[in-house]
Image (cartoon, rainbow, N blue to C red; front, side, top):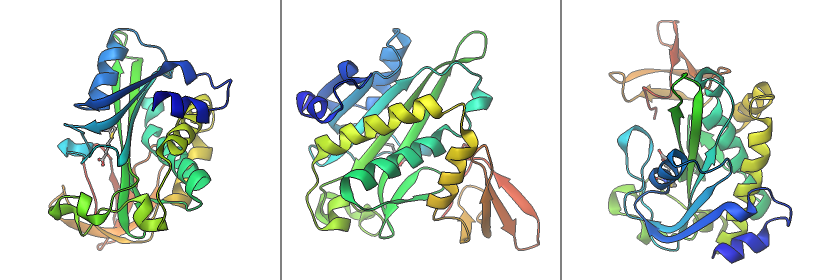
Length: 258
Ligand code: BTN
């Protein structure tokens, strides 16, 4: 599989020689963090055929059955403070929409902050994790992406049947996962070069892709408070207009919306 992904990359792709493929792992993010702590360089990519302990945001799990999805984590080493990386999950989201559109011809939407959506169903998610150096700069960031590719509804556990979907369910075609994996790596590499210099550009694209804006949302983790999603600010926070007219700023680390 590693060779098949490699053969889909441009020959001069700077990350091409740093792909690690595993048939099964606990979590590619956990493994990437271990490799990063041992000094693995920017652009080290971990891909797996399945995960036994795939992780999502806010302590959730990510269903990762063998051979049906893409489970990818990449190590980034931006030279900056954590405050300069608040938009990282949004930038990865835009990059993943670009990759899916390039390979499948359909562009997913993004449900704030990290869910990729097609036909109203979640087809993927993003988990970004940072580690700080002793001087409180960013030592490394691990960006983890899971995409449901060739699942049918039967491949998901029953509790996900009303919310989960896959690219093949949405397009009616089976998906070449090696081509999409290569497109994801290409988009992530381009993103990593623009990340700090073009924050405004990423956030402009994110607002276009974000299907949450303009909708009435319920903040699950804040006693069910409800409002209209008005904007996403430069740090990726959701600005929610409450029924009493107040504007509430929701930080992705603390809340999730429905
Ligand atoms: C979410 O839905 O909240 C985020 C899901 C992120 C899943 C990906 S799969 C590859 C990487 N490894 C993990 O354990 N999680 C991410």
